[in-house]
Every structure is written in structure tokens, then in C-alpha cells.
Length: 186
Image (tube, rainbow, N blue to C red; front, side, top):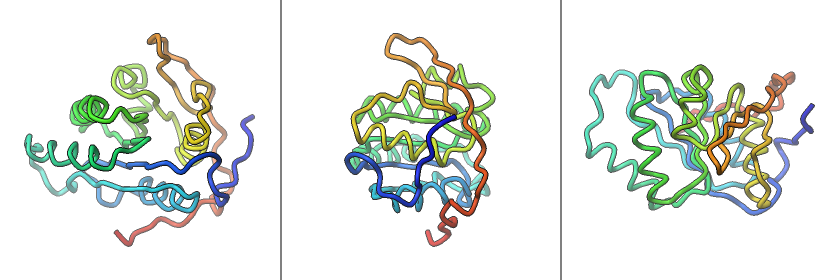
């Protein structure tokens, strides 16, 4: 059983810059909880909502360039993406470009990442296979302290030699009141 993390306590280690990236979903409940959770732990958090679901157009090269340019200027330590199957190819393209530009740790979550974890690890460093709140809290603590994350519960991780490490699932969040309310202000 993983150690309990106090989500209201300041993060262990140095302050990180984190980008949360969602595709075609301005209402992304997960990102709207992750943002205040990481912010209350002292991190510099930026949420990017790439288009909305009623925008039925394939993103242009210019659209993708703008997102990559913004993330490059932010120079994040961590980029967390919520990936649905419909936007898998877009997430893969953006991940490759972001890693080439600033090389942050990239974690994918969402239904596609949970369903096709091995395939997703050809692009992302980490795949969250369940609820992401405690995963992101522990991941940012570890990175902030310079500690490895290959044994992070609830995640599959691609090691430096390309091996996939399939860590055990994380316990479901028993007390949802421990989470900050979703921030709907932006």
C-alpha cells in the first residue's frame, strides 16, 4: 500500500513548472481538479485547453505550432496530458515536438492511456492507469526531490532502456473531500 500524501501540504522538493494539456474539452473535470491541487502544493501550474468539443475541425499546423511554442516558452518540468482515443494521434505528435523542444517528463492519462498503455508508452514517459490526483502529487514530489519515479504506483513507466515497468494499481481515493474543488474560473 502506498504512503499517504497530504494533498494540502507543500510539495516536497523544489517548485516545479507543470503544464496540464487537454484536447477538445474545456470542461475537463480532471484538469480542473489537478490545477488547484498542484497549485496549492506550491507548483507553477498552467492549463491549456486545446480547442473545444464543438470545434469539429482538425487542428491546423499553425494550431499545433502555437501550442508547442507556448509550452516551449513555459519550459515545464512536467507535461500531463488527458488523452482520449479520438485525439491520440494529435497527442503523439505534440508529445514528440514538446520532448524535442524542452524534454519534460510527459505523463498521459485518460481513457486511451488506460486502455492502450503499452502503445502510449511509445510516446509518453509515464501512463497513469487510474485516478491521477495522488499520482501527480507523488510524481511532482519525486521529481522535485530528484528521486526516480519508475516504481510509481498506479502507473506504467518506460525505463531508460525501453523496458515497460508495470507498477501495481493505486488504491481508489476513499475520501473525495481530500481533493480541492474543481476550478471553473478559467
